[in-house]
Every structure is written in structure tokens, then in C-alpha cells.
Length: 52
Image 1 (cartoon, helix red, strand yellow):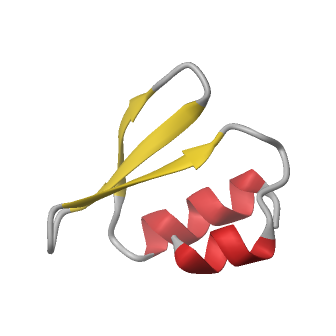
Image 2 (tube, helix red, strand yellow; image 1 turned 90 degrees about the vertical axis):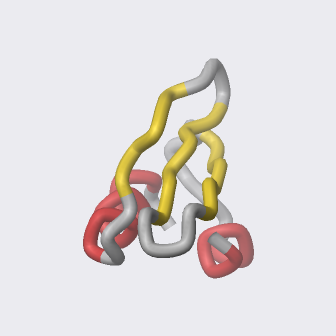
């Protein structure tokens, strides 16, 4: 899955970008406070995308 597609799905789910790190992006889900990190790679593997 492309990183942009995953970001689009995160926004659609109500999450927002908390901060950008050196190699990862941190997204927060405001409904439960969970912070998820995913890599800045152009492609994110499907199993990782589904886990996030």
C-alpha cells in the first residue's frame, strides 16, 4: 500500500498526524489516545498497514 493511501485512510478514520520523526510518522487516534508509528517509506507492506 502506498504511504499516501495509508495517510488518507488514517485521516478518514479520524486520526491526525502528531509529529514527524526522522524515519517514522506518529499518528494519534483521539477517541482512544493510541499513538501509531509507521515508516516514511513510499510503500508500506500490507500486513503492517492492516495492523495499524
